[in-house]
Image 1 (cartoon, rainbow, N blue to C red):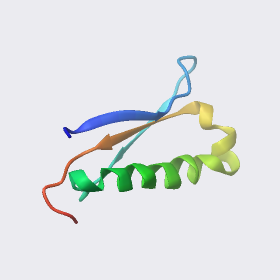
Image 2: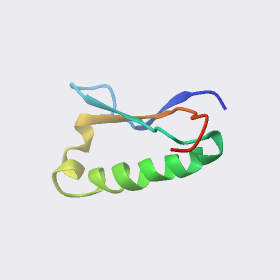
Image 3: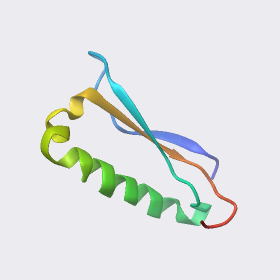
Image 4: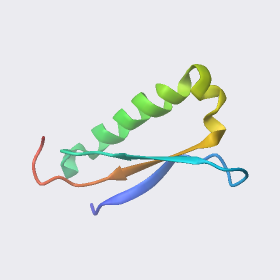
Length: 73
């Protein structure tokens, strides 16, 4: 699997947005699902699932960058 970037929170095109890029370090190709699940759990369901971030989620875009590490961290 080559390195890739995936938008995991898209808030449309209207208005200014803050783009948050999440880079995983130390995840091998075999660990990419673990990394993807961690981003979903910690950011999408964690930070953006509660309080003021949930209310203001439309002001953000989140991009998950999958980088293949040669060895686990």
